[in-house]
Image (cartoon, rainbow, N blue to C red):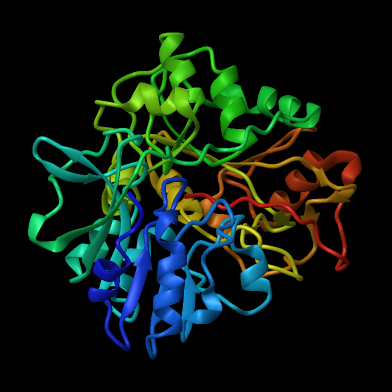
Length: 401
């Protein structure tokens, strides 16, 4: 059924803050109505999370203020144009913001109906924190999203159904790995032991790592890609995966349906839980400097990915006894080295939260090295690509939910 504009508008008052559930299952059928409400309601504020695909029906300029703490690929132009403010915050800290300066009055979210009540659908992310902070839920009930969220159902008295949809969540685009990425993963795979607890970032890197694995692992990550279903098919998946976003397609959604795999960020990104046992965190970077500091935020010209869960997982893995914080990055992007003298943007993940850097040319094991030795090891891992000076920056994305 089409969105109930009157029911949606009834939840919103002048000066309200509206948060929109994020990820590939965001309630996009409400975007036009929310924009129209904002155009006719004074002082409406907008809070967005991870937006992996642009939403042309959502007009941020209609709001008095629009902010995001994880722009992803879909908000790059709006952030670059100044229509949405990017907040440099780790994903694990978003519940604190939602209980503080970003406290929402309304959460627009996609839900699924179960015999016990309503649950979040393709992602849980930070949405429970929004409800705990006092938000009412403007819910779109999906008949095509999987039922895979763990934990209690949503409080019925806080949910107002404003629409229903038969449209499935959007699919994660398939990124075929480049030859240099295949060589990089070949160097990386030996660091992941049988029975290891593994976190991966989005995109081709994580998918390639899972595809190339030959030992059984547990998945404890911000997101689940399609290749998790392949792991299960090959009998290499131990236990039930832990994640807060789905980032795949029909195959993944079918596999997770009926399994309690999705949890809130308060659980998935909790540093104490993550570091309590060996964690192998595999993430990439936009740039690495010669001290081993990591930039995942963007380039000099634009925010391209955001910070996300990169520092959450890297720090947890670096402090977990027996685990590893691994940064995997090809030595060049569009012909320019990704090893730089100085990062284009502020540090996203500090060097002391990085154990190993893997490239297609080599491995820089930074554990137990002083600053000079680290620089030497990184230069060796970049080989012929060398170090790039302060010139134009590459334009890649490495946001890690």
